[in-house]
Image: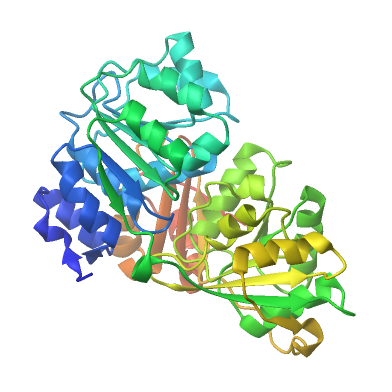
Length: 460
């Protein structure tokens, strides 16, 4: 498909300027095919893998349909299967809405206290992003009103069905206006997803980019453990392939901790993510990995649901899952948006389910003896970015533009030195190139942002 610029869309100049600032030169296939329809108010079924640009597509559509900002009740509702995905969707919407000063995007997810969410809703919201369970909880408490929703979006609909959210989604949809626009995105279009579309959508137009040239370009490597330990095979595989960013999947929390300690001792910049951690810590691990401040994330499947990082170079199956569809879902996190990806699997032939999973998921594959991997002979890759934590956020009226302005005008940074910015109520995280991190921290601690004093430190 030929590259199509965003300028071909019916978008205000301010949106086009924001898109250019974010580095989006041309539309991805799902964006080029779905955005014109969504901007015209059509219901759309988007069949696309994560990482193809679907979030930016439905976020732009929802933002352009806002009749005004600062309303008491939300005009767009986006449901996601996991709190991690909801948080990432909200970040993307805020990035695209940076020129709309008063647009309020609120995340409603479980795992966090409901009281601050209720208080935030009392001050109004333009767009709500949430998980079905927590959104339904607010509706039952009558702290959320959906009477003014003009855009209803179901993201990763197949995952929501897999997790048993159908009845919750149905109850939520019943409280939205019947003449709303409904957008549904899913990585698979099975009978259950099509049934969902029949119930909630009106004459939807189906867009699919999951085939041919749009399929992930993933190279699969299978290493037999043999006489080596699983730990040594992992170390050798990472040393040989040298991925700048990798997710290592383990089946148990305790294994995640052990592998994290192992890789850290070998000099890797590593983060650990599993369900035994506090939600606040899980959110921070995802944020640090997403903005390039660590090279390796060790995670369980449950904790990594909703993980949506643009450029994961490799996925490693330290433990193979017991089901082929979980294997496919894991490796689908690499090779996104036209990039080449790598999957590495450690095979223990003594465990019969290992070969069964690989046979079903990969079909044909070559097994390489782990002993043939060269021993580690160089330091692991270093993160490109480093995250700075500032002791001020939305309460102090900090905005991304304020931070970029101070960093470039006062601290002498180039815009290319600044990565992702995450602003919460009382704290802000900013990713910057590693070589300027100390300079920026000193600049904040001894200077000012918006004529205010703030303190800053390394986030990890």
